[in-house]
Image 1 (cartoon, rainbow, N blue to C red):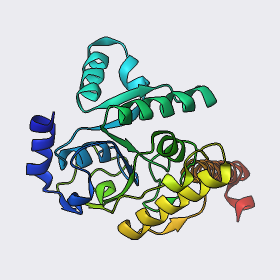
Image 2: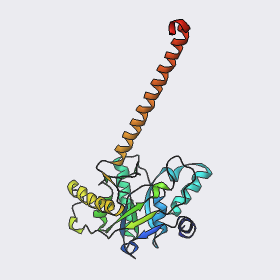
Image 3: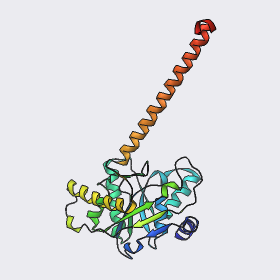
Length: 254
């Protein structure tokens, strides 16, 4: 996959990278990145010599048919782990266990603390349940990563990607050994997550929004729904007014 997918990405898009020396040459580490695009999980591993394992939703691996099998093979090939994210707390625990297992093998584990892609290019509040708990359970260092301009390559609604140079800026590893044994303290989880998010913000230059991206997406969807309903109502009123004017006749309308 590094030769085929990774090589093609590097040749076509020529991503620029800063801070490659901050990724350990060996041993476990957590790559905590902002999340702007579906392609983030491909560009980051493409520029690294080591394998990076991310968590992906289980639907990518369970879709039936030929297309489903090809999709599952592709995601396995690029180092994605299937996790059922619809199961609430149980799904979260499964994701944490998967991350710890990757790190116990001495590998790199990639995670997006925001939990989902940014809806508007801004950086949103990190969720403490995943990143912080994996970091404290494994003792692995956290390497902050900023993906830059990847959302411009294939914006929503665009079928063909735009050929341009995205960027990847990698910060120095963060050591959280001072919190050892405190993985059940919610204030510690919040503090650790916020520290990582601050570093990502500093590296990316993004505007920070202190709400979860999932909440922002709900607000955007609700606003779009309300706008659509308002337009439909205006169109319906205009149609009724036009019909009333027509029924009234030229004299009465005047």
